[in-house]
Amino acid sequence: MEIEQRREQREYRVEELAEAAGITARTLRFYRERKLLQPPRREGRIAWYGERHLERLRVIGELLERGHTLGGIAELIGAGESGQDVAGLIGLRDAITAPWSDETPVHLSWAELQQAFGDQLTDSTTAESIAQGYVTVGEDGITHVSRRLMDATRELVAEGVPLEAVLAVSRKAQEFADAMAEAFTSLIRDQLLGSLEHVAELTPGEAVRLAEQVRRLRPLARSVADAQFGLAMDRRVTAEYRALIES
Image 1 (tube, rainbow, N blue to C red):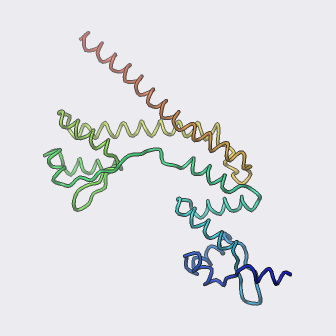
Image 2: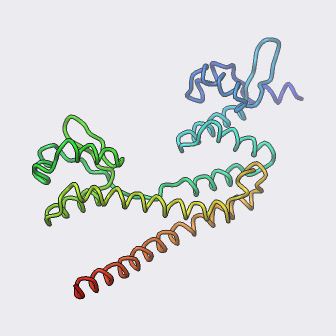
Image 3: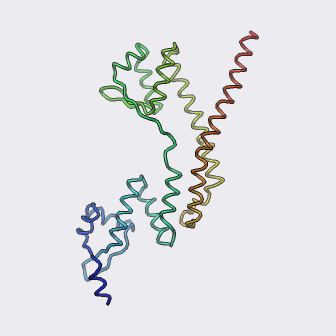
């Protein structure tokens, strides 16, 4: 009976399994060494792999495409082999690590940059733009990670604000934004995600619950940040106006 079941289920040698999974035999062996793959059935010196091995390789490939590291994949697989719902853990990781920004990159040629900024486009201002991490430079121009920020920069300069001053404010705003992001992530990490220090101990229900919580908190964080900035501008502008009329 057991022999008949083995015949009914296809088995693969290393090279055959690698080809079916779309990877190299060397990669397959690497996964096996990292214990990402279940042990094969051995018949003498021949290792035989089955459909469950092929399915595992497809899961690994999908997780790599999603941006998971091999260490993270091993953790997820280990949790799954302990009886956990790997799909729930993957959903939790995706909820946590999904991008917050939805900015559209924009490319500008050197001619367009010269037209927008004139003689303010110097080695110094270009270096500062690159240092802030928003700009990459190529032979035909630059690519900015955010069309909105690039458009705002051009409009401010068109209104008479020096590019150097815009970049100085941009750096300060980036520092404040990083501090606000740190405050939010610390709050979520300390108050909600403390159990992730032992991800292998999460139950499927806990993983799903935490993923849903993180998704609900995303728009709340944006709302708080927007409200705080608006209120801060109200306070600052009012103080500046009073100082102006009293001087």
